[in-house]
Length: 369
Length: 194
Image 1 (spheres, rainbow over the protein chains, first blue to last red):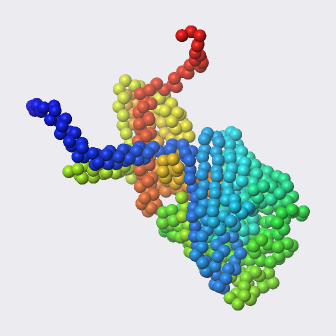
Image 2: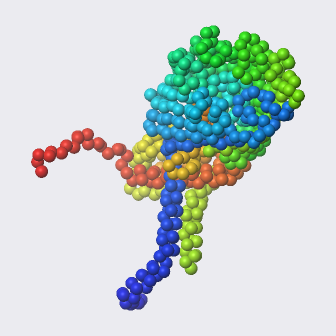
Image 3: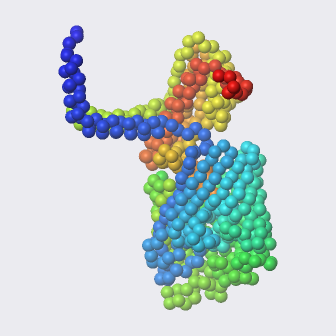
C-alpha cells in the first residue's frame, strides 16, 4: 500500500524537524562518532611483543617516624623525620621500531635529587639499544646499574626504605654493553663503563669493566652474577637472585663485596661486604608481607657512605606490607637496625647519646602507571 | 522520545563492549574458549592446511606452531600484550598466553583458542616491561586472584584478540596461500615521449 504525500510537504517537514532538532542531532552525532572512535580503538589488540609508545612511571609519598625523635638510619631516600614528605615523580618513555629501541626516564623530587649525580639533571635512564642479531643486543647510554637487588624507583622495591647494600653500591652506570643470549636459561652481558659510578660524564676515561651472567636454573628462579671493576671505581662482586617458589611465596637474596680502588680518583674510598635475604608471602589477593634481613659490614680501612663506622657491622630487619588497590600500593613498614658495638655506632637516642639501635616506622603510598 | 533516542545512543557502545567479553564461552573442562566452525565449500583439506600455515607465518610469526603429527589439525601457542592507556601512549599491564587449535577436513574447518593465562608485567630497572615470572593466573581463576577491573580488561581484550584471529583466519582461507609474486622490474617514466 502506497500513501502519496506531496513532495514539497515532505521536504518542509524534514527541514522543520531538522531545524528544531539541530542542536540535539549534532550532539547525538558527536556522541555517536566519539563512541564509534572509542569502540574502534578498543577493537585492536597488539599482537606482537612491541607496544607502540609505552609510558610508565610512578609517584610516591611517605611519612616516617624514628622512635628517637630524629632521623637515624642513613640509607637512601625516606630521609625526612616526622614529616609527610614526597619521593619523586618518575616518567619514562620507550619505543621500539624493528630492532632499534630507546628508553628515556626522567624524575623530579627529593628522591631524584638523592639519586642522580648532577643537580638540575633529572635523568634516570637514557639509552639506545639495537638488536644486532636475534641473540646479540648492543646498548649505549646512561643506565640503571646492573648491580644489586634494589633499585631507585619505588615500584621496583618491596620495602620502601632501602638496604645498606643498595645505598653503598652503584646507582647508575654510563657506558656501552653487549648482551648475548645463549638460551632461555643463560645470557651474558659484558661492557665498558665510565670510570666512576653514577656520573653523566667520566672523570678521566671509560675504564670500568662490567659483566653480568644471568642464569635461570629452574622455572621462576633467576640468578645474576655481577662484577664491575676499574682502576678508579674499585671492584664490586655481586650476586642477586630471586625465586618465585609458589604464586604466594618468593625468596630473594643479594650478597656483595666491594673493594675500593688503590689509587681511586673518585669519592669511593670505603669498602664493605653484606648479604640480605627477602622472603615475601602473599596472604590475600591484595596483601603481601615481606621481610628484609640484612647483614652489612664495613671494612676497617676507609669510611662508609652509609653504615657503621669502619670495622663495624649492622643487622637490619625490615618488615613491610604491600597493600594493593589497583595501581596504588600502601607500604606500612617497621625497621629495626642494630650496630654490633657503640664503638662503631652512628645512631643516637632521644637524648642524642650514642646507642647501638634505631627503630623507625614508615607509611608510604606509591602509585604506579 | 528524543531523550530515549539519546540514551539508546549512549547505551549502544556499552552493549558493544560487553558483547566482546561475551564472545568467550566455557568448554567441557570449564576453561574459557573462543570457538568457531566454518563451512567453506569447494576447498580440500590440503588447501586448508597450506593456507593455515601461511596464515600463521604471516600474521603470527612469534607464535610457536607444533609439528603437525595428526593430519587434519594444527596447534600451537602464542601470547599478546594487555595494554591500557590512551590510543597514542600505552602502558603494558601484562600478557596473555594461549593455545590455539585448528582442525580441517574437506570443505570445513574449525578453530578454537583456549588456555588463557594472564602474567602481570613489571617495569625493570632499565625501563623494560618484563613478565613477573611465576605469577601467571588462569583467567578461570581470575575472580579469586585479580581485581574485577583487571579481569574484565583481560576478558575483553582476549575476546577482541580471538575475534581478530578468527577474522584473519577466515580471510586467509579464501585467499591463495602464496605471497603475490613481486614485479622486481623498476618502473621508469619516459619524460621524452608523451
